[in-house]
Amino acid sequence: MVAGETSGDLLAGLLLGGLRTRWPGLQSAGIGGARMAEHGFDAWWPSERLAVRGYVEVLRHYRGITAIRDQLRTRLLHQRPDVFIGVDAPDFNLQLERDLKQRGIHTVHFVCPSVWAWRAERLEKIRASVDHMLCLFPFEPALLQQHGVAATFVGHPLADVIPMHADRAAARATLGLRDDVPVLAILPGSRRSEIQYLAQRFFAAAQLLLRERPTLQCVVPAIPALHGLVEQIARDAGVAEQVRILRGQSHTVLAACDVTLIASGTATLEAALFKRPMVIAYNMHWLSWQIMRRKRLQAWVGLPNILCRDFVVPELLQEQATPRALADAVNQWLDAPDRVLRLQHRFEALHLELQRDTSKLATDAIETLLET
Image: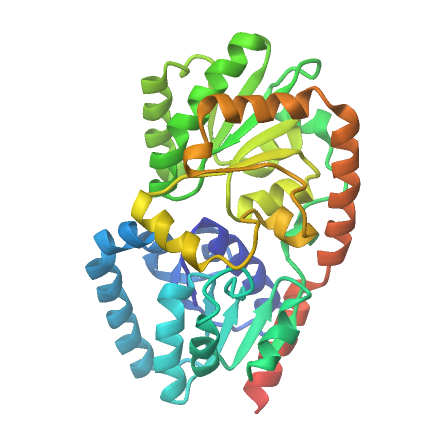
């Protein structure tokens, strides 16, 4: 297995739980993180080594990443596993999967690349690389099957992990937060490059909000590996004493908050499943943005908006993501309880749509593939 970042490690860990229930003697190894290690996964490399986003950013790490892929390919072709499962990280995994598939090793990819949103040219590469695709969203299998790719909708495992109605008061008590004043969750991303581009903007927005709402409680669930970087950016922004920076605990923070200022990515879906209003932002190297913008197929970037087919939450991208604009968008949620209630109803319907026995459905699909 290969999971390329924090969100992939979470999904892979949930999948490994189902696989080990079906096959207690299962041996798993490759590239992964802490959630996978909980299920006996042997990480030859940590998933953080692949956590790079953007064209320019990838180029800076290209030689190191390709060296890892070459070494992994050689090792897998020598050991020949029963199945290779690539979890997200399509730029890394699809090429590896194609090489393994050509040599007779079964390949499964978990999380369909967003070919319905951008880079539709990937469909041909997927067909050449993947024996079976495990899809998180219900509209994906039909699209893939039109292009000759076998696929199964397995639901989104987070829809089972996250409760339909999270206990906000209990989460605040766990974190030592007051229950009578608003909480802002700040999630600037799980990759170093995301944090470097977004955290300063988010903290500058928090500073504006704290001037206007002095009792506002701001909490940042930083991934442990990047906790020091987040703390340094907070100090540089002058908010280190006003913002609580935690090691992890993102789900507890999302359960506790009234609104979240959040980087586009899987975390936005987690926020939606917690039924929390959000302001989605993204910023990257200007050249990466120019390339990516030309490949977009939809008006939306954030997963909640894509799945609801509407701008149910604001998106502030690149030059739009100024501290003042971010702060104003947060204020609009805090000042509009009726709007928040309508959004919660939309997110409840989305939660039900994504709720399946993911680990069983995925394991069934893998077992069927192995029997062919």
